[in-house]
Length: 240
Image 1 (spheres, helix red, strand yellow):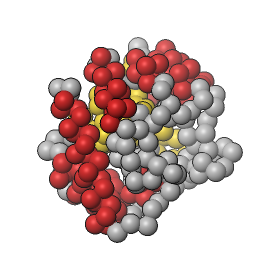
Image 2: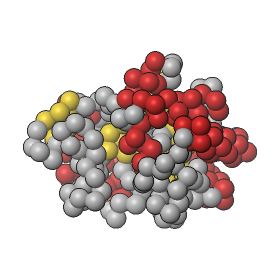
Image 3: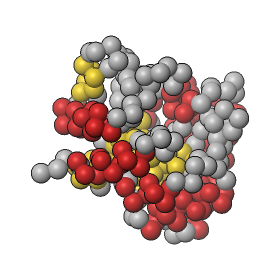
């Protein structure tokens, strides 16, 4: 009997591969236009998500198209809050126009990483979500600052792990600047996802085993083998 997993992917980021990815996933995180994409992109990807009955998520970020949202910008908490509220309101409006429902929010890139370690930035994200939405889930990493802040403020959370990225001993993602940050082999990814989903453990780059919790697994839409990886995962797991 196959293990059930939720597979998510970051989409609407200018790669135009959503039509290949959407049939193979169960959740999507759509760029809100701050690091990539546009209103037209949002609408296009939303239509695909609705067609394939994929859970819809907002993918807000630092407003930084130059660095694809992968650099922590020097912004005050007030400025960041305003930007995130604007992104989430835009996304909510676009979803409503297609009679869809926003299921979750997953921060992007540097924002995702900073809220894992900074309680103050985590609180900004939580406040932005609660200002725009009444009932959404937050995709976040296990054993992080954002986890405790979200729970303290009454947000529903979903633990996320990364299928195609290596972890350090403290459950941080290995920097993309390092050659072993990204996992290329689909079979290795299957093995890692199975271990995380069934044993709640992850093998780190220092050859140690760490406990981890994950209810959804991300494969990056810009991975050169994204479609192949998703196809293999669909063959090994019940994706829902």
